[in-house]
Length: 274
Image 1 (cartoon, rainbow, N blue to C red):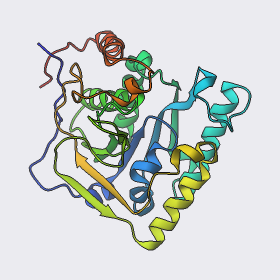
Image 2 (cartoon, rainbow, N blue to C red; image 1 turned 45 degrees about the horizontal axis):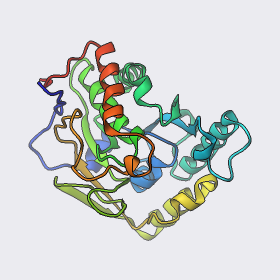
Image 3 (cartoon, rainbow, N blue to C red; image 1 turned 45 degrees about the vertical axis):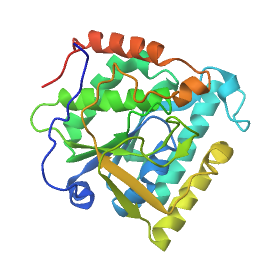
Image 4 (tube, rainbow, N blue to C red; image 1 turned 90 degrees about the horizontal axis):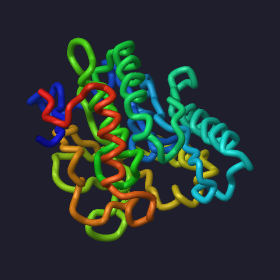
């Protein structure tokens, strides 16, 4: 039977992000800058969030580094951390609220079991009403691993689980690369940013100087969110080429092979979760 994850507390009421964020929320992103792309405006409006980066944003392969990266991987990771703290300070999020779980970029599935345990411990400490994270769309292997890790961590919590909400990043689908739009269905909430929030989000994006070319196409005018629906992570998110396959980084089969190994290490079967 295929592995499937179900949202722990779907709730029939319409999604009220502001009310949930005011009760306490956590943003879980794969890399430094993902939080700004997907939810910088929400962070500006509700800066009391905890922000967690699963990776340090620095791959092992120097061919994947920014041309502005220092000479060492450790130096590149430190640079990306500094950029994240400076950008999040613009949103009013203090450095004490920003955690990095330290996995190398591109390797989140290899550390999945550790990431799930650490996320569950962090969420159990904070008890947020809302968790915002990536959608499972095949854009980046770490984005998909983060979507899985957050669901698995929420399922391990004692008591009521937080409401899980997805933010946009990028995905390819059956056509060209699409930025800041969801693939597939699902009722989404579009949140336009006012002039001040837009100015501050643009400033946040600009502080990621090492990622200047990558971030240049991303807009700051609005953000989109949707409630996380049940997902079968053993199946491709869509039939078209996944963006990371198109780039030649890896195949979905290799992604799932590593992810399923992490789930087995957690004694989580590849079967529907209640």
